[in-house]
Length: 437
Image (cartoon, rainbow, N blue to C red):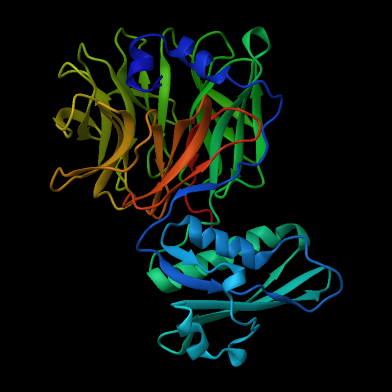
C-alpha cells in the first residue's frame, strides 16, 4: 500500500485509487487530534483559563488551545483544569509555593478584554521552581483570529522554555477522498498544524499526490492525474492560481523544492526508467541528475541545498542514496533492513527521516547521518509519507486506523505520538509547511 518506490515500480495510479476510495463521505472537515502515546519525560505545566473582562463569552478558549498545543508537542504535560489549585490572571496573584505542591514546573496565566472590534490578550509565563516571571506580552486579536493568536502565544512559550522556535502557527497540507468508483472525488486541503481551520484548495475527479510546500509557504507543488496521466502542478495556496510544469509520457512525480525556491527536483520516466531531474523554475529547463537502469524517485534537498537524497533500487531493493545537487556519484546511506524509502532531511541536516520495513510492517524511522544509527519511531503497520516540522521536533505521516487512512505525528525522539483522523473519511499525503512569519 505504500505509494513511494512500490507505487512507481508497479501500479501507482491503481494503488492510489484503492486507498482513496475507502471513504464514503462527500466533504472533509477539521482533523481531530487523538493522543495515543504521551512522553514519560514531558515537563509539567499549568495553563490557567484566561480571565475575560467583557460581556458574554469568547468564541475560542485561548488558554485551552495553548494547553493543547503544548501537549501535542510531546514536550509538555499540562495539568488538567480540575487539578488547578487557583485561577490567577496575572503574575501578581501567583503564589509559587502553591504551584510547587502540584509539581507544576511552569505556569501560564492571562486575561482578555474587549478592544474596539477585537480583543486585547495579556499573558505571562512563570518559572515556578525559579520563582520568577519569564515572559510577558500583550497581543491584539480580531474575533476570527483568536485561534491564530493562541498559536502565536504557544510559539512564544515553547521557545522561551526550550530555546527552540515553536511551530504551532504553521500549516499542513493533505489529500482527502470521498465516494467510490466512478463517483470518487479527491481534494487537497490546507489546515492549521493542529488540524483546525481546514480549507479546500483543489478538488478533482482524479487522484492528487505528493503535495509539498514552497520554502516561502506561498505555493504547493503536487501531482495530479486530471489529464489522464500524471502531471506536476504548482499552485498558490491563497489565490488558487496554478501552472502545470510537466506532463511527459509516463511518470511525472515526487516534486521537491530547493531551499531557495528556484528549482524543483522530481522523478520523470520520459526517457525510460524513472530518473531524478531538476527543473529551473525561471527558465523551465530540465537537468537530468541520475542515469541508471534502476528506479530513482522521492528526491529531497538538504537544508543548505548542496545535496539531494533519493530512493533507488540500484542495490536490488529500495534504499536511500545521496548525491550532490548537480548530480554525480551517489553514496548509499541506508544499510539497515531490506527496505528504506522516502527520505526527508531534518531542518538542521543532521538526520534523515524515512519509511523502513521490518517483519511487523512499515514504520517511520530516523537515521543519524554522522553515525548511521537508525531509530524506529512508530509501531503501526502502514506508515508512510513522512514530513518534518520546520523546527524538527515532530514528524507527520500517513497511516491506518482500522480501515481508515489517517494522519499521525510522532516526536523526533519517538516518545510521544498522536493521530489526526478525519470525521469524514480517508486522509493521506501530509506535508508540513515552513515557518510562515
